[in-house]
Image 1 (tube, rainbow, N blue to C red):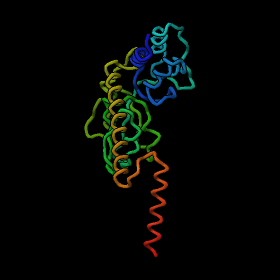
Image 2 (image 1 turned 180 degrees about the vertical axis):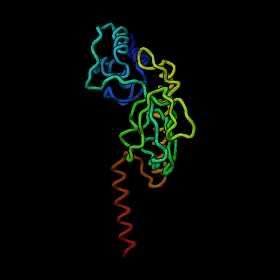
Image 3 (image 1 turned 90 degrees about the vertical axis):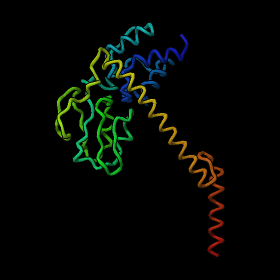
Image 4 (image 1 turned 120 degrees about the vertical axis):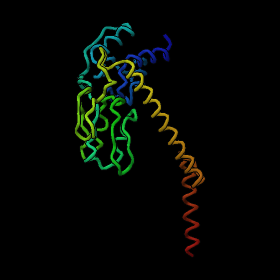
Length: 221
């Protein structure tokens, strides 16, 4: 089987939480590492034993127990922000791998429950600890105006979550990566327009800085 196709098949099995517990920055990089033989099939706690079995069947190897060093399986949950405590720092927005948190700087944020993968990456950055994990499907009323059911679309499945939702999470993660890359390029272009120096060109940057210092010294005289 060609490597690219193998990566696709492995990635299709992974739960797409993008939680990084496997030690890689997302499910796709983990899939690539498995295909390359640099990662084991037992590093994904959300996938648990069922996911390991599917990976073993695909690769024609014997299944092994989940490596607890990467975490343990947990019931599906989604993030909930206490909007009365939220200070609008945007750190949770920056941490969310699927852009499931919306809000603006210095304004309260909220989680799109149907899109949350339960990765928990938003918990640590929050400086006021206003984010908690709520069991999927639980009826809640705290911090929201009306009672609602959290995470309706993230139905539990034999490998951690319903496949359709996992596919959507993969797509949202890819869109996020594309957006971040586009923003990076835009920032680089703005820097070039402002300084005439491309990002990643330290020699030209040093020369430009020296010229600016020389011009500043001459103007002082």
